[in-house]
Every structure is written in structure tokens, then in C-alpha cells.
Amino acid sequence: MAEQFVSKASEFKDGDRQIIRLGEQEIGIFKHEGNFYAYSNFCLHQGGPACEGLTIAGVKEHLREDKTSAGLYFDEKSMHFVCPWHGYEYDMFTGEQVADRKLKLKKYEIVQKGDEVYVVA
Amino acid sequence: MDLIADRGRRVTVEELNTTQLLSHAAKQARDRKFEDVLIVDCDAHHYENEHFGDILPFMENEVLKQLALSSRAKGGRGNVAPTGFGYQDMGGRVTRYPLRSSEKTEQVGAKRDVQLGMRWMDAMSVDYSCLFPTGMLNIGMHPQKEMEFELCWAYARWVTEKVIPESGNRFYTMLCLPFGDPEGSLRMVEHFGDRPGVGGFMVTTVRDRMAVHDNAHMKTYAAIQERGKVLAFHSGPQWGSTTFQSCNRFISAHALGFSWYNILHCTNWVVNGMGERFPKLPVLWIEAGLSWIPFLMQRLDHEYMLRPSECPVLKKKPSDYMRDMFYSSQPMEIQDMGALETTFRMINAESQLLYASDYPHWDFDLPSTLWDLPFVSDKARHNMLGGTAHKLFKLPPRNEGQKANLIKYGNLATGRT
Image (cartoon, rainbow over all chains, first blue to last red; front, side, top):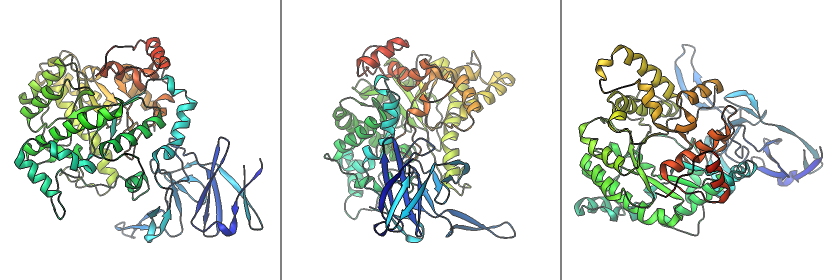
């Protein structure tokens, strides 16, 4: 395992992502609300580029106490990234597939040294 | 390029390049040495609605042609073909939908579709693809049978004269029949049946009223059988129908719709003894996954044992007729591996299952979905990915490695569609 340079932190904008390729490995690095997250770029479904698609908040349904539905809403506390091949949706904070959290993308450690961002791979 | 996410937030993604998008598929193909495996995709699509300007001039009836062309003129408000409700792109999560118009090609018109097709076929190591339209899968909902015929006819001319020849014969097709017009359907089989690249004919199953056993269709089936072509039923959803209007989510209408229409028409086909009437007609059921098949086999066999007097043409159980037919693999429900293995056994998948990608639609399957199944033999892998389709559609191997594998697994046939 070695530290691989990703980017200068000051040049990595919030909401952006970068894909780095190390031999057979591909790693997606996201910056979300000031924090970095890094995952394998191979979707657990059919192997698509899991980190290269849309990032979008999770969708929830508001159920009232009487069990009636008050409709769908975006959950502001969550953030997902979505494989663009088929829509497999992953939790930005954990790498878990949101429909079955037993499925989890490989997560990589991020190291910041001054203004430089590294991924340990 | 920006996509719209939650609360109007914009997310920048790479511009669409199909080759780049499918680079992981290309890696899978290299890892599995697919170059030496003949891979035939029996169900892929393009967006013919983007080419109506080229297609509609092939309409025969001048009055209907003028109506259709006029409706598409600037300021026109008409719809040429029926459309359905839905969110195939999942709100942009499946990025090739919102980005597809931005993909750069050197070619335009029909040649652009061919170029895009070659990009995904090469990435997946698909040698041949059966090309179907997308919007016209709803053609059965057109209220005018005359217009249904005209649109099917025009599309058939365009795709056989302008698209397939440009593909170096790597595209073939099963032409969409105007099934609401039985005489027109027969005329299409007679006119187009011997054209290069025509592997068969396809009935779109999304229709409010369609009796596949109606006497009006027998001449069409006989004509297809006589020519040694395939009859395919391509399923689809119809969220707006009375049956599915109670579904409040696309997932419900989609999951049920595809299965429902195949279940409905396959039931009528089997119960009315069409397998006895046309024993040499290959019948292929497309794009409903596989899980509906064991259900229907069990259900029909159960009732047949109690009510054989209603099916006097049958000489064996309904499931036996279903095992004589062919099924496309996509979207393969790989959830309960044991159930999937049972399904493969029940349908004789080794000889009856054909690989389908359904690309570029949202729930496409790669060849690896079949190849990597832990319970199938090498022979079954080769048969399902291309060997069986090679025999049905007479598509030649593209290299010596493929030819050697076709011989090894007893699949080599001669000739081409």
C-alpha cells in the first residue's frame, strides 16, 4: 500500500470527483461538504464505473403518524453517488449500496498533507 | 456537462462517449477472451424517433404521409407514434439518457446510429445485434391500423435499406409487424422476408386487444415459418393502461408490465396449440426476464391437468410447448441463484436461451451476466451467448477462434440471413 497523489486540496472543489487509475485499480475520490471519500470505481452489480455518475441526495418518503403518505422528499442529510450504467446507488459516507447495505464498495483511506491529497492504495 | 440533481443542484459529469462509458465492459471481454466466442445479442435498440425525418418519406400512402410529415413541421403539435409514460433515465441517474444527444460522432442520420452501435458492440465484444426500435414498441397503441401499417412499413424500408447495410451486416433485425392489420402483416412478411439482415418478424405485445390465436394471423405465421424465419414477441410496459393505472411508481408498472404482456400472449399461444399448428416456427419471447416462465409453466400445467377439454389441440403439457420455444435473457433476475438455476433447468436454457443486452436501455445486461453464472456448463455458455442464435439466424463466425468454438460445441451452421 502506498500513498498516491490525487490533487491539491485547494484545487479540488466541493461537489467534484476525480478518478485515478493505478494499474488494474480505479478509484473514485469525492469531495463532499469539505470531506474526502474514496471508493473502488467498479460497481458491485455488473462492474460499471460506479463513481462516475450523478451524485444526488437520497430519496425518502414522509409517513404521517396515521400511516398516510405525505409524499417523497430529498433527504438533506444524505448524499449518494450513482453508477451511470444501471443506477446502482451508493451511500457517499459508507460506500454501502443503499438498497442492500450488506453490499459495500471497497473504501480507500484518504490522507491530507498540507494542501496535498493522497489516497492509500 | 451538467446534470440536474436534488433541489436544482448541478453536477458536472464527463461528456458521453459510449466507448469510454463501457470501458469496464471491454475489460471484462478481454479478461474472458470473448474475441473467440461468437456473441449474438438478440435484442438491442436505437432511437428511431430521432430519424423520423428520414423514415416518414418511406410511407406509401400519400395522404397519411402528408399528415405525418406535416405534424413534424416547425410549429406542428402532432405525435406521429404513440408514446408511453415513464422515467427510464431515473431522474438522470442513468446518464446516457440525458447525455445521448451530446455524444460526438463523425456520422449523422442512420450512419450515426450505426457508429454508436459499433461503439457499444465492440466494447461488449458483441459480434451481431438484432436492432429494434424504441418508441415504436408502442405502435400497437396507435388508434389507426392504417397508420400502424404505414409506420411499420416505412421503418422496415429505412432500417433494411439505410441502417443494416451501413453496419457491415453486424446489425440484423426482426421487423416490427403491424399486428393490428393482419393483411398488412402478411404483406410485410412477403415483401421483406427475404431481404438481407431480416432474421424474422417481431410483434410488439403492448396492445389493449390482441389475440395471437386469431384466425386472421395464421397466414402470417405460415409465411414466416415457410421462410425459416423467427417470430418474436417483444414485451413492454404500459403504465397508462387500466391494468397498471393503480401503480404509483414506475418500478411497479415496469416490473409487472413486461412480465404481464408476455404471460398473456404466451398463454394464448400455448393454450390454443400454436406449437402444434406451426411446429417448425421458432418463437422467441423477448425482454421480460426469466422469472415469469417457471410461474407460467406451473400454472398452465396445473390447470391443463384439470381442463384438457379446453385445449384439445395439445398433445403434451403446456410447459413442454414452452420448452420448445426460445427466450431472451435480459433482464436476468440474478437474485436467488437457486431459483435462477431451477429456471434454467425448466426452460432447457442450454438450447433455448439467447443472450440479449437491451442496450442502451437502462436495465441492459452484459455478456458476463450469463458467462459468469456458476452453474452453467461451457457448452451452455457458448450456446447462450451466440451458438443458438447462430443457428437460428444463420450468422457466420467472425474469426477462426469463433468458428472453432462453434464446431467444438456442435453449433456450426452455414449461410447468413
